[in-house]
Image (cartoon, rainbow, N blue to C red; front, side):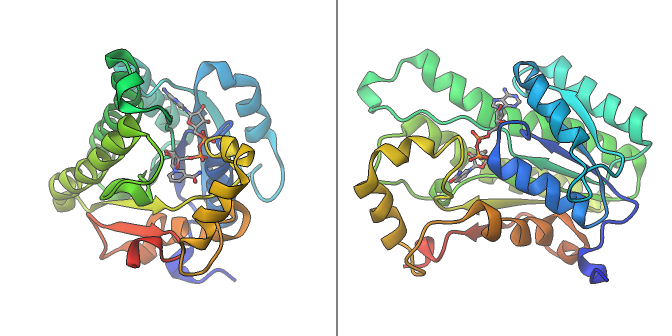
Length: 262
Ligand SMILES: NC(=O)c1ccc[n+]([C@@H]2O[C@H](COP(=O)([O-])OP(=O)(O)OC[C@H]3O[C@@H](n4cnc5c(N)ncnc54)[C@H](O)[C@@H]3O)[C@@H](O)[C@H]2O)c1
């Protein structure tokens, strides 16, 4: 018996960045487990992994799941995604923006093209998905929830050189607040989840080659450990994606073992 605050029965959730993404995968399973029909979307180059995810019968993923291709940097592709999801499922209630890229490089070795590529995916992509989702949810007229993925480094920076990543993810916070303000009157809540270091995922896999750094990240948290995608992510995601968040909007919820609270 699901607590009604976390019950998504009859709702449709679109999860962007869900093929290779470990956090996206956990999110898809959590949303499906709460009763939602889940549409997963990722780059066309991930089509095979996407199709497998939509077919995955466990746990509860098979409940009317669908797979879609999208490039969040492409306006037409994002508009088509929203249209296709609503055409296939008849409605939309929740959108989770988990698509993202990271670039670990010193500032003086980062080209303008590389910087702009990261900003284009992480910041412009989040805004674009939010814009199209906002239009669709407003037209539908029954409210909804948008959850954007930023990072513990949204309002600070870390010890490794990632200037493009930090800059883009800081922008995600104010995209969230700005859309929350404009969509609030339509009953659409927009919030951010800010994970600390979740390991392992595709994005953090490279840290495995640097055990001292990995240990340092864990010890830097109040809980003394890294985030475990399997156990530490689904709960906070469901909090923001479900009715439990009915009076929360424009917020950043840190899921970082206390890193940001020191
Ligand atoms: N893993 C962590 O520790 C951590 C920490 C803080 C924030 N985050 C954020 O959480 C989100 C998910 O992280 P993850 O660790 O699962 O990352 P990941 O690299 O495993 O997944 C990211 C997904 O985004 C997709 N993607 C990339 N560019 C895209 C584009 N142009 N269009 C559509 N999809 C695209 C990728 O194909 C991939 O499936 C990211 O936004 C990331 O910045 C992760």
